[in-house]
Image 1 (cartoon, rainbow, N blue to C red):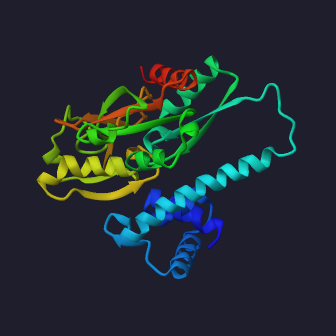
Image 2 (image 1 turned 135 degrees about the vertical axis):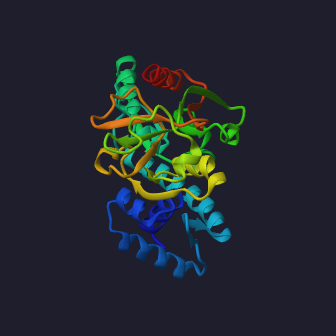
Length: 299
């Protein structure tokens, strides 16, 4: 068992996708699969099973993930301490705040504006951005030490039917920074382009696409499953490619203030699920400045 195997496994436990982890780790999917197979052979039990929704941790795999996360944090702390050995302390050394951001934050215009806002307020602080899925964020928080939590801000995307994702303990301040309804985006040549709104039942009759992110996909099924299984023909790495696929209806979270793309119509969905953009952090002056920067970027 080696460090790379643990690194690849923990990323797989977050993405539940070999292709997505390969892209994040800058290796081939075959490399990820080979590493997983070698690790499972060495420890003597399966860590994942394949399902229609991707990889799912086995019972043993879930426990192994807890142990691996604890080990990985200890290893990172060890590396950081070793790196400081023999170095004279710098009087002007900058503080670091870790942003643990859900993918919907990462691909939206909000992230860039918020980071710019923050640096205007705190030029002496560095932001270290880590991408973690909203559904995996509570477990990720539990893997951090109390000291690390003091300089960490979690930026999550929470559907309004999942209040359990806001059930953090009393150490944390939870700030709802705004809500955004799911909406449909189509090419101007699509037969729905002139519609003022669309129902969820109507969407079930269309070929759909969405951003390849667990929260968006979960929301899509939550909205549409009562009318039959939605026909999801494409899961994209970008939020909106409607202009490129005129026969497909893209379902997005509508995070913006972002200028509408040329050649694309945005159609409200009746009784749509809202996604809340939420900041979660322990109370401190540094984390309060981060939350303020994101609140101003959204507002």
